[in-house]
Image 1: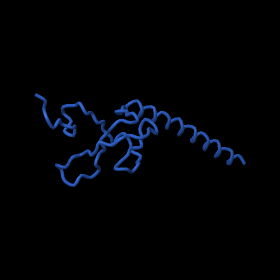
Image 2 (image 1 turned 90 degrees about the vertical axis):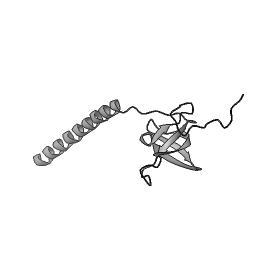
Image 3 (image 1 turned 90 degrees about the horizontal axis):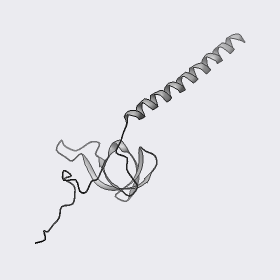
Image 4 (image 1 turned 60 degrees about the horizontal axis):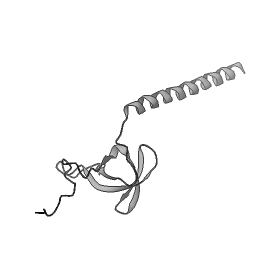
Length: 111
């Protein structure tokens, strides 16, 4: 009986310590992760996991964000299909950014 009691006490302590350690690691990780948090209705580019060749574009899109599940997961409309995407695979679509090669260029100039 005493052995059983000692084993259960040790098991409880291990479980408590592992929960504390997990919370500590989560807090440390969350303090370093600062993503480009997005809003519903915003456009974004998605990372291509395995491009065909090294000169292929790394991102595709823009796609519309339909729903925000939490700070790191979003539901995105990809060609009519709703998919859950992590923020690490997303880049915000900035239409007015001059470095954005995907931004829509004016087709005619006014004189």
